[in-house]
Length: 432
Ligand code: AMP
Ligand code: MG
Image (cartoon, rainbow, N blue to C red):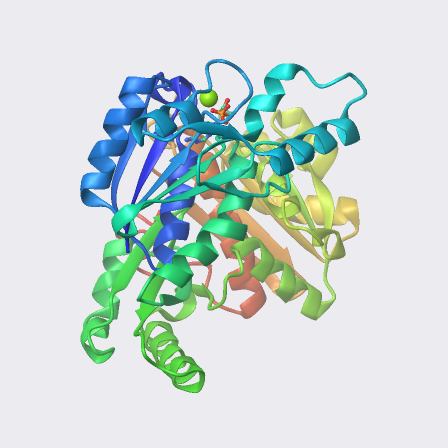
């Protein structure tokens, strides 16, 4: 089954809204067994929607639209799609009852009549119940095996409806079943990883291997061949994972879906150790990443944002002489931050992050992107100097990832970094 996504909304075209719905939908469609062959961003305009729909139908079996299902007059996806497909619009009484019940359960004020529109469907369509909002999803089966699905634009609603209704529909309609095994790596560049993996594709009977970089790590995603029964699929996946593991070794942090912060948390929990963090250039992003994980209170105590030198001294006990002698962005200060914050919080482990995120503040000796990280555990201490590229946001984001990885490496008794690592300039001595 082929699919195309239409992201409908003036806010998407004006750049005020980033089209994250496309990313979510494309991934879900692909993982459910559809091949995404097109994507269009379309304004809230009936003629434009009709034209986009016609083009999409010329090349895809399934057209998934997101956006324009709200109650306000600027939301006209249902009317426009119905007109383009020459269907009447009919009000669905069951959906209307749902919309009203939802309103009554949340708000005291009477529901404005404009909300009734959210119960309007193109004739012959099926409504998919929306558990997190009022506008239902709409599924319309057309002639010749073609389908149109309309989903709301609000990302949470779109995602839930896609997960609950669209994915099962696509899995049922698609002839291929797609199963992936994913090995997640951190600290190694995509191209170096590919080089290390070498002829993995050949050794896996030509299976598709995708390298998916993001947030400073690279996921290796291997498509498990179809037509295997469950035990054979499990054996094949284990063989694939072993090949990647042997090639990428200490760069591999997860062979299931666990994110890096969870891997670190699990290692800490196994040891009964807790963590505190002192953050300068990441300004709380590290604590934010950790606490985005439900249950992190089991191993994370908290931390301090120590942006000013005085704060480094006051909150993490960094000696002013150390700051004066080496500068705030230095190995010595990173180590003092990690030790100091652990002492302050009474935790077994500490992480210190200090760096120059840019765009200003760089010097020839310490250019923008210079970041010093330190991790302390009862087993010892790791320091790592990074020379990161990218803008301020990227430097900060990657510093968080590498700080977590440094602690992972310390906990596992691995070296602080290895050759081939991102952020290690050639010729720089290995940090330990
Ligand atoms: P709508 O269903 O068109 O009323 O959309 C409601 C809200 O969802 C908009 O105000 C946007 O903030 C958001 N939204 C709409 N389309 C998208 C999209 N393609 N990606 C991410 N967010 C979106
Ligand atoms: Mg809209």
